[in-house]
Length: 370
Image: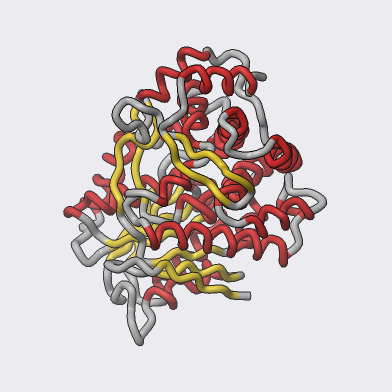
């Protein structure tokens, strides 16, 4: 089964390929003789983490070398806390040692952290070289690998340092999810639910109809393919209309405003990204209900679906309200001192607004307490 989802950007269109055994065909797709995305013979720096590379590094390396590329690899530690400029420096050192040139490329094999860092290094090495995304986590497949957002964290906030840099190709092989830890699978489901709430009511309904969503093994091939393709299509639809987040694309931050604050305050250890997004969606749902944007019934549907996925729904009790509010003021989405929230208007529709008072935010935080 293979599905190709175009991302029709005006300057650099590319494809998302969802295919079983896709890792073994990466080289063939890049070196396409009719229109090569990267000409064979070029140097490719494959970036991964030790665990992922142990499972899939050989398959991807062989695919690329058999297609005629010169491949070297560099491994970075796994985990959000390593998404720093120090790791980027290590990538620059590897690029220098391997003599990457302007026609060379970097290939990200891993989850969202590896993809974000590889993309940022590629965006800034020699003022920009090409890169390829091969996401291995559900979260990266449906979100982080698509749309060209790259970057690293600052001690005072998530993804405050970054650049837009689109990949030349995104390759998604659903079968790599077999080795994904259950907690990481659930983290990815948070982003899938997000698409259902803000964009795709049919996807939301399909998730509601599933018996279990908390582990990969409970999803049949048809539902998994629907989850991947509909989520990727939603992201592609939004990004193709607003590449640099001048308007519409901001809805993709649903759940991320308070979610990022929770991540930062737990030092990217106690709560992972998907768990934080789930918590943030519940909090945003409280705000939307308080302001009359959507009904209590829709908020309850969202809550039930998040709970069904096994994700947390409450802000950790040890996090202080004032600390959350302080971090919200440093969020990238603040405009003219106003925190901008993505709020649902119903299942499948959302808006972005700065008309959320501190009192309403405090009420939502209180309602979301663990």
